Image (cartoon, rainbow over all chains, first blue to last red):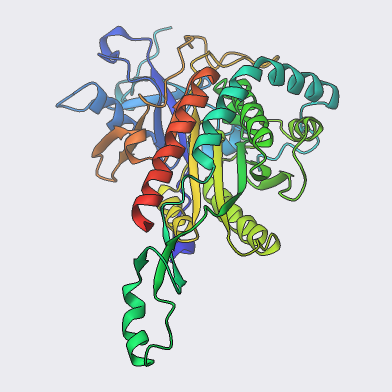
Length: 103
Length: 317
Ligand SMILES: [Mg+2]
């Protein structure tokens, strides 16, 4: 049934990182992804682009905020339209138990 | 909710007029070029088709032979003749993407130029009726089929665009357009011997969802003899930064806009399997053209229409 289909909304994202050791080998340009994606799926995407055999967990920042929900919820909560290209910054995920404050 | 009530920034009447006049004069020679190409393509060509049923003629209509004998040679209209070309009438619907991505990607100006060029050429040709709709989340009829498309209409149409819609509902557009074509078909009951051709030109940056649903509608359009040509505006000029927007993050680097031909689509399964493909490889419209410069338009549009007419003639003749 056509009506039972979920809304498959997509958004263009552009991935970047401040850390050269996890920078993408080639710039994939904008990527069109489903807005239903969450951190875990985006992490798989970055690992795929890095050709990593052993996946590294990543965290994502959009407009300086950590992505804790689906992209869709993030857009809604922040009043951002899926019509704009999102700049998504990624960084290695910190593993909570070993986290220490340095000052 | 992402509604921005009271914040609709349509093009103001003064700007609409200035913009229309500007595009009209800057695309003047291109319009003439397009008009000439379209005249050759859209006008009926030589009457090569044989039509029945006549008492004398060029060739026997074999389907009439058995009834002829069975009727004891009374039903004698058994001949085919080369007939005169029938007059063709066109209804052309131009659908312009009014969604925000058009502004974000810098496609806005080229899209308005394209709209000007196409509407000018079609009205110079005088081959039929022209309608313009805007689409984003919903469809807005900016110019109706039964009104002539003048320079003033162009200004009125421009006033109805703001490139602010927060969704790009192409599925809804095709659905609604098929309804509009159906209404227009019924209203403009053509006289016998006149062929009605319905053509839809979508002018958009090409980014849309629900591809499976769209494909189903494109097939329906084909069954209803509505031809759809998708004109993709592939702007490579960097998007303009609206005033008051701050950079997305401190590290945000100004990138060049990705061409739709290079854009990758991504699908990720719940198990984390990543599938990537070129967006255009699965584009749901069969006839599309990618335009980066308005000067390319007369040539590529004529090419797409020629191909379509070739296929229609090939399948029905
Ligand atoms: Mg859009």
